[in-house]
Each structure stands twice: as structure tokens, then as C-alpha cells.
Image (cartoon, rainbow, N blue to C red; front, side, top):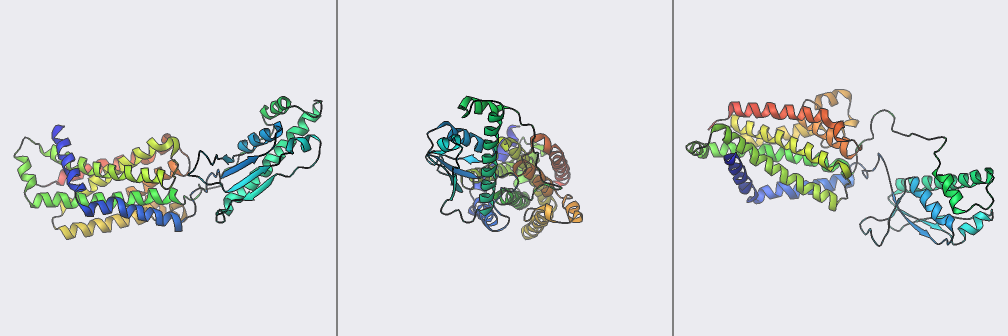
Amino acid sequence: MKNILSIGHNELRLFMKSRTALLWLFVLPLAFVALMARFSFGDGRSSNRFPPVLIENADTGFLGNVFIDTLSAQGLWRIDPEKDTKNKPIRTIRVPADFTTRVLARQPSNVELVPVPGSEDAQGDALVIEARLVRALVALNSHLFETSRQGTQWPPDEQALRTALARPALVTLDSKFAGRDPVPSGVGFSLPGNLVYFLTMNLLIFGGATVAATRRSGVLRRLLTLPVRRGELIAGQLYGLWLLGAVQIAFLLLIGKLVFHLNLGANTPGVVLVLLVYAWVAAAIGTLIGSLLDAHDRIVGVCVLASILMAALGGCWFPMELVPDVLRTAGHCVPTAWALDALHRLISFGGSLGDVLRPLSVLAAFGAAATAAASRWFRV
């Protein structure tokens, strides 16, 4: 084990000293993520939107607070501009100062929905906010009507109204997308797709080129003169490439969280697990290519072609939900499609780790097969 760790850590150190490697590991993936998130597939919140709103409650009575709680129950994301400086509201909801007085006097009261400057492009979220505002107003009026029908003295007090609000609803609505899941979009699509693509390309090229170069230079033969077994040498090469993939994964996930505000939530461990398993698959394929080929230019050409083909078939550049069933079936002949199935299930569709056991098992099978083949044809 010590030999495997030493070889892997040394390989990572050599990789990180290359400026070209840094460009392909960090700069280009980040540029592609930003570009595709901006221009390709929308805002990334098509499946379950919780648009942020700013609520200005000028009401001094209890109905203003009850109404705000009703808004929250309808799925509106209330933000505090003093505490949350990263997220900007789409709309402002203004509750008037005489809201409680006029409602309890059975007079109309106007709740304002005001656009926020700079939110002109968020028309979809604006419609969601408007619809949920109407639902909250209907819900509040319904509970006021309910308390009056049950013989409660009018006007009702806050306790009576909150008791009505706490009762289970007699009718519930379960809404979901018909047929297929919603198409992944925005940074929720671009970051996983580009991360899988650049993991594939980098680990294939760096892995294949490194194995071939160390074999041509005689480094591998010299290592075998030391107390290092052939299996440890292969495992050390794989471990070094896997570490390189782990560095890229950590960087892009951190940037996705801090810069692009990608919300992984409780699914972060599952996302990391899927990416680390896929890094093993790509590292094994890269080692296999380096074991079979010798010429540097041929290795680079094969690796670039293979990574582009797997990215195109696997859905790294466009959602698999948009292609015919024949192409979707063909795409699942390569590991990229299985990795993206798992990532989209966790990131875009809110699935749990149990929902991605099948793609994880398929990826593990790809990794085991590629590792076995690389071990079989590994040459020194």
C-alpha cells in the first residue's frame, strides 16, 4: 500500500507542476460551464422553483404575520436582504399598514406585487410568484370564512385563525411532471456535463500519455528493480490519475456552489460519490490506452476522439431527454451517460442515493472491466 500511495502522490505532484494541465483542469472547464449555463438551457430551476421574494410588511396587526406564514406555505422563498446578500429577490410583496384593520372590517385591502429592478429576464419566476400570491390570498380568505362559519365571534382573534390554518386540508393537490422528468437546464446541466466531459478528456489524455512516456523512458522498468510489484505499479498509476480527477471535482463543485449558486443540498455526498467512481472509470480507460499505444500523437488523437464521442453520446453537451430513444440507448453503451443519469437524478430531480444505485453499479462494472483490461495489457 505504501508503494501505491507514493507512486500516486508523485504522479499528482508532476501533473500539478504543468501549466498546460492547470489550464485543462481549471480554466477551460470553468469557462465552458459559464458559457453553457448562460446561453444553452435556461436558468436551471425548471423542475421545482422556489423564486426569492422580498416581503415588506407594514401591517401592525396579526393578519400581516399570518398572511406571511401563508405565503411561505405556498412555496415562496422569503429572503432577508441584510443577511442574504448573494440572492436577489425577483419581486417585492407589500402588505399595507391597515391590512388587519380593513380585512377585519370586511373592507377590501390591496396587497402590492412590485417588480424589482434588474429582474426583467425572470418572467417565469415572476409568474410563479404571482400564482402563489393569489393562492395565499385565497387560502387566507378561506380560513377567515371557515372561522366565521364555525360560530367563532367575528372578528376572529389570531389564535382562532392559526388553529384553522393548522387543521389538515380536506383537499390536497399533488402536482408533478407528466411523462419524463423535466429537462435539466442552466448550471444544473452545464456543470455536471462539462465536469464529466473534462474528467474524461483529462484522465484519458494524461493517463495514456503518462503511461506511454514512462514506458518509453524506461522509468517503469527501473521501478520494477525496486521492491515494487507489477500490481502496485499499475495501482499507483491509477491512484495518481484518480487523485487528479478528485482535485478537479473538488474545484468545480466548490466553484459551482460559491459562484454559480448550484444547490446540492443533502445530495452532496451522492454527487461526490458518483464523480469519484466515474474518475476511477476514466483513469482506468486512460491507463488502458497508454498500455496499448506508444506514440504520443497517436495517444492524444485517440483520447480526444474517444472523449468527444463519449461526451456526445452520453449527453454532456445536450440533455438526453431531447434525443430519440435509439440514440438514448446507444448513449448508454458508454459510461458518460450513466454518470450523467446519476448526477441529474441527484441535482436536477432531487433524488436520493438509493435512486442512483443502478447507474453506480453500471459505472463500477465499467471501472472493473477497464481496470482488468489495463492490468492485462500493461507493459513496462
